[in-house]
Length: 375
Image 1: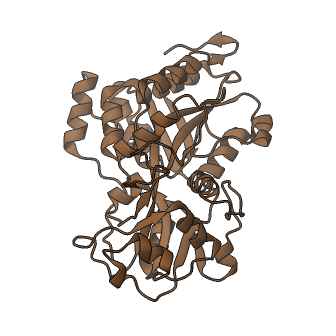
Image 2: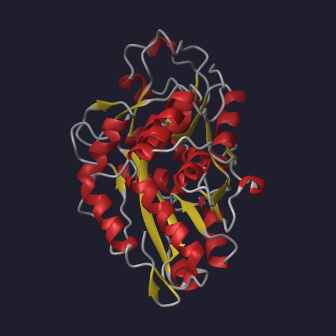
């Protein structure tokens, strides 16, 4: 069993580092505290991806040290909810791990999606027979994982799982596998199901933010809202398996499986293995700055990874003060060394230079009332 900690912790060392890098000793304003705002200040409201929530929460704490006139309010509601909110015009920016589909592009008119961090998706498990501190980690491969979520592999001591785990085979029980997934519209689900689609032709449930899960139909699966909901379901269901973001798993001390990647190597989710996957697909971006980075071919690449995005209106903003503050905020999280370091310390992976330059080039094209918005 694993022990829960807070989803994120703001440490004094990181805060001191940020203030030093910003060249100020100001005390950051708490997120969503209008009483502390400077005269003429603006509030930038965002919602969406729970994956990027710890990073957004850190930025909300620290960005007022850079610009006291800005307050960042971000809520983790899931990528689907975030995309709906930015299309409906109820927020200034949305967070999403899922790309915009054609209908959303049409409805959103001038929406632009900006990758700003990446992360791995990992398979957390609750196997009371394994000691996370002393036993080797569980190992899975893509086909086996797809078969588990298809309901074709139903027991922890299935021969396919035993063959991947000779060192812990005797500890894998004759117990049904209970699969856990996201119940909300989730970009993490899109990343995970993109991977299952790439892993196995037997995976027939498709890919997207919401899936009709085969194991749910069989009564051996259940959804949870957000990363916290999936974690809670894994915690209370012994012999369960579910996907969560790497950063979230690390922050909450969740045991998670190693994977056999496309090159046939056993790899562990980490910043290095995720960055390797990003590098494998560095030239795969669409004109909308989206890319799928699953089942990467590199020798050390993690096979279930994805970008997390900020979505904004590129040309239709009319409040030009707010538009400039929003562009400055995005530029800061992309380029400020302290912001990048803090996100890295939380388990996120910053953009490689080549990708960052593509993103900044598109950010420079934002306009308000027909005029360029500069950072």
